[in-house]
Image 1 (tube, rainbow, N blue to C red):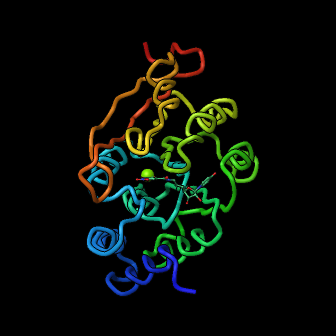
Image 2 (cartoon, protein in one colour):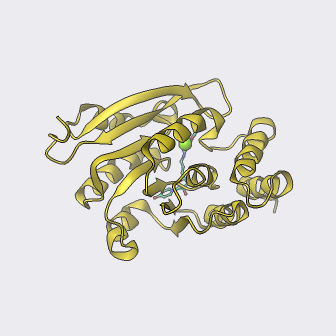
Length: 221
Ligand SMILES: O=C(NC/C=C/[C@H]1O[C@@H](n2ccc(=O)cc2)[C@H](O)[C@@H]1O)c1cc([N+](=O)[O-])cc(O)c1O
Ligand SMILES: [Mg+2]
């Protein structure tokens, strides 16, 4: 019974990063996944685009769908204003346990609420159970066939206000065609594509940045 990939990533973090230093945690994971073992983190190349979006938007409430090993969780939370909060949903209990360790190692447990469960079950409960009004930023990086249904669910639950940003990973590889079609053609969104590469590879990939304009689709004229 060998170790799992998330366990090996945690070990690399504990070995090659400094407690309380989110940057060193991010660098340790990138080094491990670049030189030792690929893993589905958003990675350093797309990560710079994520950083720029966060620094520009200065979101106060962030939702991440798909924690995995908390690479993007730590990367994003590290750049948030002091009073900001990030909620991250993880379906797999083993990944969540590793993610929790990495979040704590990075010293970001105050900013991050990790919830174990399915996005479809939890999104309708966030207002009630966590006193969330709306999200300023949603980072989609979970199962690719859930991006579209979860976006529609966020709309239906009134969790997006005009100006909210959806930032979606992997819109080219593995690809999220139904989601892309929706955000690029719906009057409810102003969408743009940030071309990049699949983490730690030369494969084409990119992030879709979609600004919610409101349900009437009028939003900012
Ligand atoms: O498949 C990919 N991501 C799926 C991620 C899924 C993660 O989201 C969680 N979740 C959390 C909540 C849910 O409701 C459902 C799942 C799952 O438990 C898992 O931890 C992927 C694949 C490649 N790739 O090159 O093949 C590259 C990437 O960057 C990727 O993100
Ligand atoms: Mg991804």
